[in-house]
Length: 300
Image (tube, rainbow, N blue to C red; front, side, top):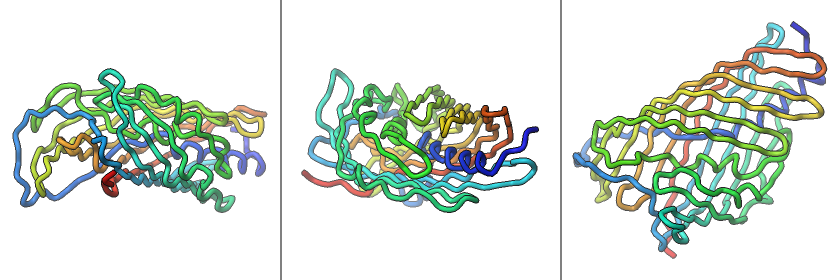
């Protein structure tokens, strides 16, 4: 195996964190004591009320452990993304949503030090997205136009944080205990990075109940899939790939038509390959947790 010079290793460490905002999905658990159970079936669809704005905050943490020439090295990446969402109409059966960015930040801690921080120049910027009733993305081109830079990670755009923001719901009505499978392919392309994430999910409607007068649905999922990411940095091409597995839970307000909390826990075991000037390959283990939570509803 070729050894890696200090300069190239530093470049590699500063490049990998661009993956941190790339794949965020869902997990939440709750004590159901005192809840009134329902049987269903129910139809779960997005339908943000036009009279309300809903605020969300997503926080994520990624730990990358790499074995480089027999030496274990860790990179920790913490991110946050806050936004306000309001429905602005329909395009056919699909829902158009107006989004305002409230906050965006990413920090990276590595053997080379601390980098990153808040990205204040996107605060207050707005864009529209179109989603299907089940949450699949239809048109996110406006999000792609909002470009920003994070120290050590290069140029990116809001599709890397938003293209899987909405948990995907079952296409048909479901009742408690029903199970269904979904397969999704998420792609991201920026100036510094391109990537593909294939997500296979086995989903179950875990519970359906009334709490505080609100009808809630909770979906648990087992996740498997593969990730492939290619990063361009200072003339080097860096590739990461490997399979992952994890689990998720989505909490959804049935009549209101929006999710209130989601989180993801995944673990990838794969390899990183550097192609210049010599081909060097070494293993990586990447664990990631992410939580998106509704902060409040705002009457407009």
